[in-house]
Image (cartoon, rainbow, N blue to C red):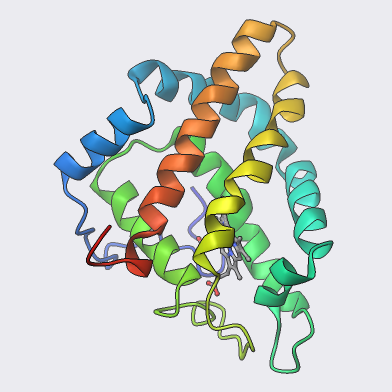
Length: 195
Ligand code: HEM
Protein backbone atom coordinates (compact mmCIF):
# COMPACT_ATOMS: atom_id res chain seq x y z
CA UNK A 1 0.00 0.00 0.00
CA UNK A 2 1.10 3.52 -0.72
CA UNK A 3 1.94 5.34 2.48
CA UNK A 4 3.84 8.01 0.49
CA UNK A 5 0.60 9.15 -1.15
CA UNK A 6 -0.22 12.69 -0.01
CA UNK A 7 -2.91 12.67 2.68
CA UNK A 8 -3.37 8.88 2.62
CA UNK A 9 -3.58 7.67 6.23
CA UNK A 10 -5.11 4.17 5.93
CA UNK A 11 -2.15 2.54 7.66
CA UNK A 12 -1.47 5.38 10.09
CA UNK A 13 -1.45 3.91 13.64
CA UNK A 14 -2.92 7.21 14.88
CA UNK A 15 -6.12 6.67 12.89
CA UNK A 16 -9.03 6.79 15.34
CA UNK A 17 -11.02 3.59 15.79
CA UNK A 18 -14.46 3.59 14.23
CA UNK A 19 -17.58 3.82 16.34
CA UNK A 20 -19.24 1.38 13.93
CA UNK A 21 -19.56 -1.95 15.73
CA UNK A 22 -18.93 -5.39 14.26
CA UNK A 23 -22.68 -5.93 14.68
CA UNK A 24 -23.49 -2.77 12.69
CA UNK A 25 -21.16 -3.99 9.94
CA UNK A 26 -22.63 -7.49 9.94
CA UNK A 27 -26.12 -6.03 9.53
CA UNK A 28 -24.96 -3.78 6.69
CA UNK A 29 -23.25 -6.74 5.03
CA UNK A 30 -26.58 -8.57 5.18
CA UNK A 31 -28.42 -5.55 3.77
CA UNK A 32 -26.18 -5.42 0.68
CA UNK A 33 -26.24 -9.24 0.21
CA UNK A 34 -22.50 -9.46 0.95
CA UNK A 35 -20.82 -12.86 1.12
CA UNK A 36 -17.28 -14.26 1.09
CA UNK A 37 -17.76 -14.86 -2.64
CA UNK A 38 -17.98 -11.10 -3.14
CA UNK A 39 -14.67 -10.56 -1.35
CA UNK A 40 -13.09 -13.16 -3.64
CA UNK A 41 -14.68 -11.64 -6.76
CA UNK A 42 -13.31 -8.21 -5.83
CA UNK A 43 -9.80 -9.60 -5.45
CA UNK A 44 -10.10 -10.98 -8.99
CA UNK A 45 -11.50 -7.58 -10.09
CA UNK A 46 -8.44 -5.86 -8.59
CA UNK A 47 -6.18 -7.75 -11.01
CA UNK A 48 -8.23 -6.33 -13.89
CA UNK A 49 -9.00 -2.83 -12.58
CA UNK A 50 -5.84 -1.70 -10.79
CA UNK A 51 -3.73 -1.68 -14.00
CA UNK A 52 -6.49 0.46 -15.58
CA UNK A 53 -6.65 2.93 -12.66
CA UNK A 54 -5.65 6.03 -14.63
CA UNK A 55 -8.16 5.30 -17.41
CA UNK A 56 -10.93 4.76 -14.83
CA UNK A 57 -10.03 8.03 -13.10
CA UNK A 58 -10.08 9.81 -16.47
CA UNK A 59 -13.71 8.70 -16.91
CA UNK A 60 -14.75 9.68 -13.37
CA UNK A 61 -12.92 12.99 -13.39
CA UNK A 62 -14.37 13.71 -16.84
CA UNK A 63 -17.83 13.16 -15.39
CA UNK A 64 -17.19 15.34 -12.35
CA UNK A 65 -15.61 18.04 -14.53
CA UNK A 66 -18.61 18.05 -16.86
CA UNK A 67 -21.02 18.69 -13.98
CA UNK A 68 -20.67 22.16 -12.44
CA UNK A 69 -22.47 21.13 -9.24
CA UNK A 70 -19.89 18.35 -8.69
CA UNK A 71 -16.71 20.16 -9.70
CA UNK A 72 -17.79 23.05 -7.44
CA UNK A 73 -16.71 20.93 -4.47
CA UNK A 74 -13.13 21.12 -5.76
CA UNK A 75 -13.16 24.92 -5.85
CA UNK A 76 -10.40 27.02 -4.36
CA UNK A 77 -10.89 30.37 -2.63
CA UNK A 78 -11.85 32.06 -5.92
CA UNK A 79 -14.58 29.51 -6.68
CA UNK A 80 -12.67 28.05 -9.66
CA UNK A 81 -11.51 24.38 -9.66
CA UNK A 82 -8.26 24.03 -7.71
CA UNK A 83 -5.92 21.91 -9.86
CA UNK A 84 -3.65 20.91 -6.97
CA UNK A 85 -6.65 19.82 -4.86
CA UNK A 86 -8.05 17.78 -7.76
CA UNK A 87 -4.65 16.14 -8.30
CA UNK A 88 -4.08 15.28 -4.62
CA UNK A 89 -7.52 13.71 -4.27
CA UNK A 90 -7.05 11.86 -7.58
CA UNK A 91 -4.05 10.02 -6.14
CA UNK A 92 -6.05 8.81 -3.15
CA UNK A 93 -9.06 7.99 -5.35
CA UNK A 94 -6.84 5.69 -7.38
CA UNK A 95 -5.60 4.01 -4.21
CA UNK A 96 -9.23 3.60 -3.12
CA UNK A 97 -9.93 1.38 -6.16
CA UNK A 98 -7.23 -1.02 -4.98
CA UNK A 99 -8.33 -0.76 -1.35
CA UNK A 100 -12.01 -1.35 -2.16
CA UNK A 101 -11.10 -4.53 -3.99
CA UNK A 102 -8.42 -5.96 -1.72
CA UNK A 103 -8.71 -4.74 1.87
CA UNK A 104 -10.33 -6.92 4.51
CA UNK A 105 -13.38 -5.41 6.19
CA UNK A 106 -11.58 -5.24 9.53
CA UNK A 107 -11.31 -2.54 12.23
CA UNK A 108 -8.76 -0.57 10.21
CA UNK A 109 -10.97 -0.63 7.12
CA UNK A 110 -13.86 0.68 9.22
CA UNK A 111 -11.62 3.38 10.69
CA UNK A 112 -10.59 4.58 7.23
CA UNK A 113 -14.21 4.60 6.06
CA UNK A 114 -14.89 7.02 8.95
CA UNK A 115 -11.95 9.10 7.77
CA UNK A 116 -13.22 9.24 4.16
CA UNK A 117 -16.64 10.13 5.56
CA UNK A 118 -15.42 13.16 7.50
CA UNK A 119 -13.31 14.24 4.53
CA UNK A 120 -16.56 14.65 2.57
CA UNK A 121 -18.34 16.31 5.51
CA UNK A 122 -17.95 19.74 7.14
CA UNK A 123 -15.95 18.00 9.89
CA UNK A 124 -12.81 17.69 7.78
CA UNK A 125 -13.34 18.60 4.11
CA UNK A 126 -10.40 20.64 2.71
CA UNK A 127 -8.16 20.04 5.71
CA UNK A 128 -6.20 17.05 4.41
CA UNK A 129 -4.93 18.99 1.40
CA UNK A 130 -4.86 22.37 3.16
CA UNK A 131 -7.28 23.89 0.66
CA UNK A 132 -9.01 27.23 1.12
CA UNK A 133 -12.24 26.27 -0.63
CA UNK A 134 -15.62 27.89 -1.20
CA UNK A 135 -17.07 24.39 -0.69
CA UNK A 136 -17.46 23.32 2.95
CA UNK A 137 -18.92 19.86 2.33
CA UNK A 138 -19.97 17.34 -0.30
CA UNK A 139 -23.78 17.24 -0.25
CA UNK A 140 -25.06 13.90 1.02
CA UNK A 141 -27.56 13.62 -1.85
CA UNK A 142 -24.75 13.68 -4.41
CA UNK A 143 -22.58 11.34 -2.35
CA UNK A 144 -25.42 8.81 -2.59
CA UNK A 145 -26.26 9.57 -6.23
CA UNK A 146 -22.67 9.05 -7.36
CA UNK A 147 -23.00 5.36 -6.52
CA UNK A 148 -24.61 5.10 -9.97
CA UNK A 149 -21.81 6.46 -12.19
CA UNK A 150 -19.09 4.91 -9.99
CA UNK A 151 -20.82 1.57 -10.54
CA UNK A 152 -22.10 1.56 -14.12
CA UNK A 153 -18.85 2.90 -15.59
CA UNK A 154 -16.82 0.05 -14.09
CA UNK A 155 -18.44 -2.68 -16.19
CA UNK A 156 -16.56 -1.84 -19.40
CA UNK A 157 -13.28 -1.93 -17.51
CA UNK A 158 -14.14 -5.39 -16.15
CA UNK A 159 -14.97 -6.66 -19.64
CA UNK A 160 -11.55 -5.44 -20.81
CA UNK A 161 -10.03 -8.19 -18.68
CA UNK A 162 -12.69 -10.91 -18.58
CA UNK A 163 -14.58 -12.35 -21.55
CA UNK A 164 -17.02 -14.62 -19.65
CA UNK A 165 -20.19 -12.53 -19.06
CA UNK A 166 -21.12 -14.52 -15.93
CA UNK A 167 -17.71 -13.85 -14.38
CA UNK A 168 -18.05 -10.15 -15.25
CA UNK A 169 -21.48 -10.10 -13.57
CA UNK A 170 -20.07 -11.65 -10.42
CA UNK A 171 -17.35 -9.00 -10.15
CA UNK A 172 -19.73 -6.21 -11.15
CA UNK A 173 -22.24 -7.14 -8.46
CA UNK A 174 -19.49 -7.39 -5.84
CA UNK A 175 -18.26 -3.92 -6.86
CA UNK A 176 -21.79 -2.49 -6.58
CA UNK A 177 -22.24 -3.98 -3.12
CA UNK A 178 -18.88 -2.68 -1.91
CA UNK A 179 -19.47 0.85 -3.23
CA UNK A 180 -22.96 0.98 -1.69
CA UNK A 181 -21.65 -0.35 1.62
CA UNK A 182 -18.91 2.30 1.61
CA UNK A 183 -21.30 5.17 0.96
CA UNK A 184 -23.65 3.86 3.67
CA UNK A 185 -20.71 4.11 6.11
CA UNK A 186 -19.74 7.54 4.77
CA UNK A 187 -23.28 8.82 5.50
CA UNK A 188 -22.72 8.48 9.25
CA UNK A 189 -21.42 12.00 10.09
CA UNK A 190 -24.31 13.52 8.10
CA UNK A 191 -26.83 11.84 10.37
CA UNK A 192 -25.07 10.91 13.61
CA UNK A 193 -28.18 10.25 15.69
CA UNK A 194 -30.33 8.46 13.11
CA UNK A 195 -27.66 6.56 11.13
C1 HEM B 1 -19.87 6.93 -4.64
C2 HEM B 1 -19.53 8.18 -4.46
C3 HEM B 1 -18.14 8.66 -4.12
C4 HEM B 1 -16.96 7.97 -3.98
C5 HEM B 1 -16.72 6.49 -4.15
C6 HEM B 1 -15.95 8.93 -3.60
C7 HEM B 1 -14.63 8.62 -3.33
C8 HEM B 1 -13.73 9.50 -2.80
C9 HEM B 1 -12.42 9.15 -2.32
C10 HEM B 1 -11.83 7.75 -2.36
C11 HEM B 1 -11.84 10.27 -1.84
C12 HEM B 1 -10.45 10.40 -1.22
C13 HEM B 1 -10.50 9.79 0.17
C14 HEM B 1 -9.16 9.94 0.87
O1 HEM B 1 -8.81 11.09 1.25
O2 HEM B 1 -8.46 8.92 1.05
C15 HEM B 1 -12.78 11.35 -2.04
C16 HEM B 1 -12.57 12.66 -1.68
C17 HEM B 1 -13.36 13.69 -2.16
N1 HEM B 1 -14.53 13.56 -2.85
FE1 HEM B 1 -15.54 11.88 -3.11
N2 HEM B 1 -16.53 10.16 -3.55
C18 HEM B 1 -17.83 10.06 -3.88
C19 HEM B 1 -18.73 11.07 -3.99
C20 HEM B 1 -18.35 12.39 -4.12
C21 HEM B 1 -19.19 13.46 -4.63
C22 HEM B 1 -20.64 13.32 -5.07
C23 HEM B 1 -18.42 14.58 -4.63
C24 HEM B 1 -18.78 15.98 -5.07
C25 HEM B 1 -20.01 16.47 -5.20
C26 HEM B 1 -17.14 14.23 -4.09
C27 HEM B 1 -16.11 15.11 -3.88
C28 HEM B 1 -14.97 14.80 -3.18
C29 HEM B 1 -14.05 15.79 -2.66
C30 HEM B 1 -14.16 17.31 -2.81
C31 HEM B 1 -13.04 15.09 -2.00
C32 HEM B 1 -11.87 15.68 -1.24
C33 HEM B 1 -12.35 15.91 0.19
C34 HEM B 1 -11.27 16.51 1.08
O3 HEM B 1 -11.17 17.75 1.11
O4 HEM B 1 -10.52 15.76 1.76
N3 HEM B 1 -17.13 12.89 -3.81
N4 HEM B 1 -13.91 10.86 -2.61
